[in-house]
Length: 197
Length: 276
Image (cartoon, rainbow over all chains, first blue to last red; front, side, top):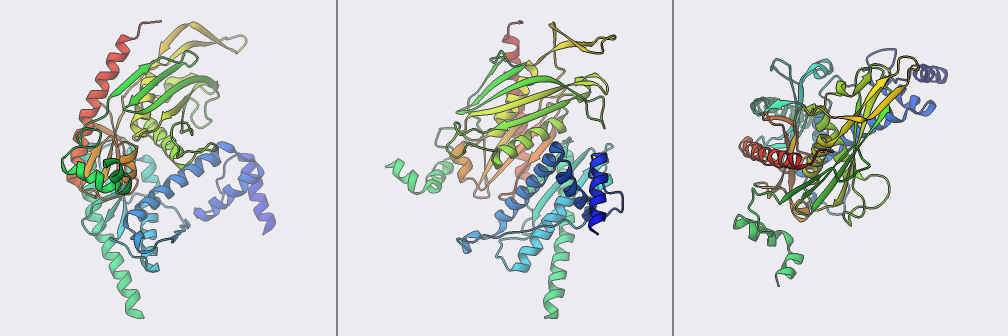
């Protein structure tokens, strides 16, 4: 097992990229990247990766801070740890949903629940909700929104690419409609969990 | 008496003003601070601009150097922005590696450059696969009084409009690059992205161009980057209180007006520069 890991690191160093030769599982790819850093530090690649993660962390943190009733727990630190098991597109939205469910599971008092929805706009203007990684790469614009469940207000937005004001309103309306399904899923899964015990 | 109240209850002090639809510095809720721009002040840089938004001051310097183009895009150059928030601009920053706010601002500017396609990266290529320009855009904040993102975007745009690149030819025999400093040309700036920032108060009120104190008291912020066709390059809302679709529409219309103001100011400044 140790030799296998070492070989993978060697392959990574020769090609200069952290791509895994086997399987689409993201956990394997991530592992190879880490080894790559140790054996042949490719400064720019690691820096870029770090900043993207930091940005995502900041967006999730700010969204949680807006809904969590922090004043009920003074001098307390709430740590939310998110581990990516597999990434098939719409990663930020998935992280937001996971964070919200985790906070509910922990019993942290919140003023509203929130959910993440991703929209991708194609070059001809078609709207696709919850796009796959391939669709995201080919899209002209990718918009991720975090909406609350009380009045469907916009809590967080992160956009990539160029889009018009009308398209923004269209995406926002579609995201608000989609968030209904996500909140219904939250309610059903929580009901199932608490009805058992 | 007022100063005492302001120290003890800053939010209440502020609400008294907001009830009258104005702010402590006399501005209305939708009014920007006085914007001034100075282009070409740094002679050692290939392009520079100084922008003042009230007290907030940001200076941008652009340096052009040679580099090998990336292997996956051999006909493209690079634009590398970096925002620096040194301790001299505000007491909240310490010296050392860039803090979170500086990294966030750098990432924001990089996103604006990427999304708006302000410069076609293919224009920066000199010889495909061998040589390309890399533009290092350094934005340094000299005085931090809120709304740093708007000031940085404007400074970057003005500095890029001021950049003059010399003509480069590849010598066929020696395969070396020859730079002709006497023949310089301006960059082809395709779009003009302008940022408009808002602060959200008590989940309902939106104010434009927040100062440092207002940012501190706000419950959320929103930044919209728009180009001249009304297309959005970036809708940056990093958490904070929620906004309805109607409020978002109001912000859009304010952003459109702001774009016209900024474009007019920049055109005036560029026209007034005497050719070198």
